[in-house]
Amino acid sequence: MSKKNTDPEDKLAEARELFVSQWGALGGSWGVNRTMAQIHALLLVTAHPLSQDDVMAELEVSRGNASTNLRDLVAWGLIRPVAVKGDRKDYYEAEKDVWKIFRALARERKKREMEPAAQVLRQCLEKTEGLRSDEAKAFREQITALADFADLANSALDKLSGTTASHALPVVLKLLK
Amino acid sequence: MSKKNTDPEDKLAEARELFVSQWGALGGSWGVNRTMAQIHALLLVTAHPLSQDDVMAELEVSRGNASTNLRDLVAWGLIRPVAVKGDRKDYYEAEKDVWKIFRALARERKKREMEPAAQVLRQCLEKTEGLRSDEAKAFREQITALADFADLANSALDKLSGTTASHALPVVLKLLK
DNA sequence: TCAAGTTTTCAAAGATTACTGAAATTAAAG
DNA sequence: CTTTAATTTCAGTAATCTTTGAAAACTTGA
Image 1 (tube, rainbow over the protein chains, first blue to last red):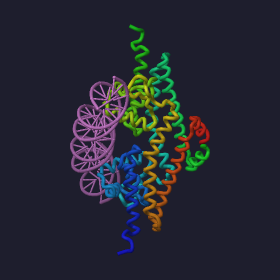
Image 2: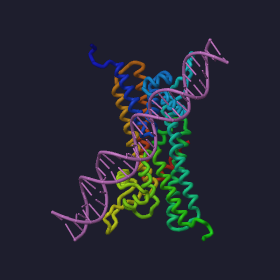
Image 3: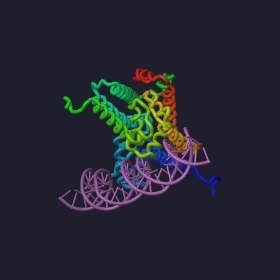
Image 4: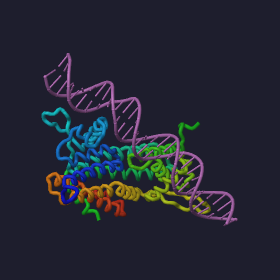
């Protein structure tokens, strides 16, 4: 028996597991499904690339689930396939630079959240173009305010994402108040 | 018969409906349920306060659904109850200032997305405190990078939300890039 | 205090979204 | 070309999230 009942290896393994499972649970509120978030978390804290089978084994998910979510993670730019010599399987490793991760998530969220919203607003303005009643004017003003804000938010995201240096954020912060 | 087959009133009504239904559909990707987003949209484009029954009638939702979502919208600060003299019912009106809407959403999202994430990261660091293996060091570095970024994002949100003037965003934009 | 009007709660039903597993497909090696 | 390994697809199932509706709990005025 050792002095403590958990040796260092166990503690690290525990912390990994905690991270992977909790990060997965968080995925929900981030608009990402649990498995996708867990795979990302797993690859984030694993030094070497993992194959689809490794992922299936670690997370106890089906082949189909692993396949779909690995594909999506690659499409989002959060992980990339890497070739391992002498092995026919595909291996994957995560992008570990937090700024790049942020940019990938921002890009995807913009696509899914901002663009459809902007389109709805545009349609509403088109449909009411030329209407002159007070009611119509109030409606158009409110919609226009939302559209202007959406444009603003969009270009903010674009500019942030366009910045290569992760130093941009701290700088912006200083300037704000 | 009029010259056109849709008169101006109809067009406005159509646009309203489009806005309410589509905004509701968008709610999903915003982490807000459909009814909640629709009620918000409805109140946003309605000049006068509406009662719970009005909302139920307009959106064809049940009493329970309307009740729950009106309560949540009030809690989020997106709508407020207003008293109407000589009427026992509660009436509600939306906050229409886009900057205030943004702040309310940011506050809520921070609470639901950032804080739990930060807590997970903290736990992971605690659990591995003092571990000296290379593996442990790499793990702690990755988690620390995420935690630092989360802190940064948090204070960015705080500062943005703390700003009263909606002029802050355009200013920030100019400074970026 | 009671009665009428109004809102809230919550178990059950319904709708949506995610996951499984096996068959179909693709890709590499012989 | 054929065999074998690996991956993708997708119909069916499971899990999750949303909504309903009716009973319980308030609230107000008489």
